[in-house]
Length: 100
Image 1 (cartoon, rainbow, N blue to C red):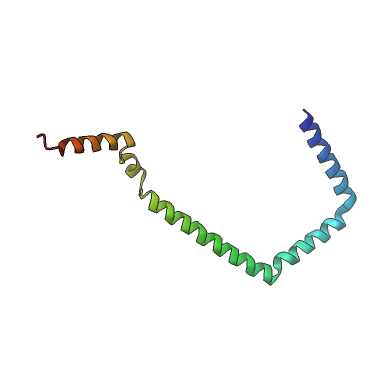
Image 2: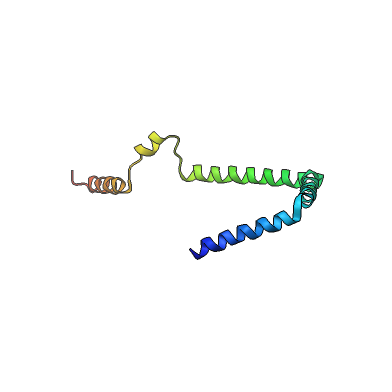
């Protein structure tokens, strides 16, 4: 309950302060933000960051595919479980012991 009261009080204070700042201040901040966003330097940096993120995503994808070479859900479901692998290993070791 205390957190709700704090939250509501914060909303009320923000509303009052925002109303006092008024529309002119909002427009001033909006113009400044547009100037910064339209700056060639900011646009260039945004492009570089976007390319790096794209490359990083591709790298992560490639590593994940290397770790789990699954091409479909059917392939995934057809893979033996760890228990099945252990059973197959035991059977192979038993058959290879020369006791046929």
